[in-house]
Image (cartoon, rainbow, N blue to C red):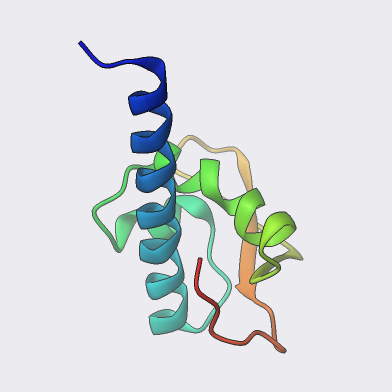
Length: 92
């Protein structure tokens, strides 16, 4: 059975891997994308992606919300995210 410390370390490691995957997709496409669109282009699920988007924007400053929205597969409006124009490659 996992201890809470082991679970915490594992979740932090997964979050870092997920952020790296998301950034790779965004760098490859170089256009604003929703979290659902990003998930289509990688091995992550939509919830795994959207959980990391605010971190990448607010904590790391690598991406930003656009004013534009798109409609996702569940017919809700979704934020489009883009790479920051002054973004430098940072280690997450």
